Image (cartoon, rainbow, N blue to C red):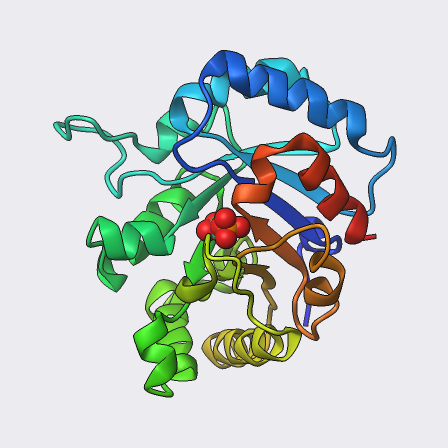
Length: 255
Ligand code: 13P
């Protein structure tokens, strides 16, 4: 198995969701930069809303410790899609784009097929996709967690070249753990990560591995144990990423 250079380190990503004006974003970045260690063992990624991307990039001023990504994009590069943003429009501002977050799958009705098309659009724009997967509470109760993670991973990645797959990251986010304070156990996270790693290995004959993040109520107090789950190599943080002190503490917990 080989790993792309960006996958050697854990990735700690902050998904700001629908929060922060440009001015608030600048303030959060300033505060965060002041609280991060000078040298980091992890890659740190901020996912602000589209309207704050430029402010975040400007405030970072090329600081090599922090990278920037978008929370979503459209599956077409450009066209008559009122209110949407194409991946090529993000390329000057971002390295990463998140696709398939459960809030988009479940609140905005995005199917596996739509998520797949978005992932392809991200790759075509030369960006790095983060594919979010995870089961709902009902699916967990029905005992189909592994089947859901397997289906979403397969649908997202089937048919990609080894080179394309090598640019992808997966975020396992059990829907029942998002914003609820309920977290998966490290064993739950490891079991889901194992499914992702198996599917990816099957899809490309073991040629390349992807980095798997855990997301869902990650806090400074549970980060270290979740990040030490076998097969997990980072975190996708929601609420705690809106506070510089908490997000910096999670980055520190990653080692
Ligand atoms: P919380 O950390 O607020 O549970 O959100 C997780 C999430 O959805 C990150 O993408």
